Image (cartoon, rainbow, N blue to C red; front, side, top):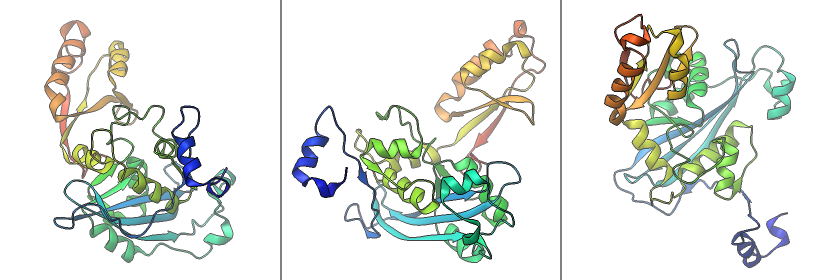
Length: 295
């Protein structure tokens, strides 16, 4: 079903029904958005990668980014042109990656990311945003080591989507559908545009998604490493939201600054009490900022 089959009045009537929902193809427009303030603006970059896979030996085959300019209220006032590079991985693409992205081996032959241009863009911004920042940051720094230490936001994890009325999962395509849009997923530029559309969306509270994401990302948090926790308390830790680090062989969790004291008390009573038989006196607590949160 396309917009050509119905006039706008009919589409609005359908969209207002409890039985139907209209999804429109995302068409991101470059230039001024016509909203927001022009003074006190800052620059951010939205980035996405396509890769040969998700393993430690996998590499980037497509890198895309766009700069956005936003005002102090988190309103996007302008959108830059898209930058995109393909890169030859030096080996054949896995069949599932080629099928998912539509990228062919022939397209990649002899192609390379422009390191200088990519770093110029990255350094021009206050922050870099991706929908899965931990993955994209890891891939980017492996390819461009000079990108280490930049401030990063995650449009997936730095927004409380459920609290803002977005039920279901936090995948990019699903979230986009919740604001009435769909996009050509699984190419880097398309996913960048989808993230920008999400960031510009007004939440029920009156703020934009970008404003909430930035507030969360800029605030310091604390990483609790439950060193010396007894094996018998693993279910308590897991239920509390701790994750297992197989390399360090310890459970860890990141909490916001306002929740630090509560977490200390919980660990003291549930993990480091005498009857929990800990092997250490207490956790290791590390301060985390948006420069190292997703490293």
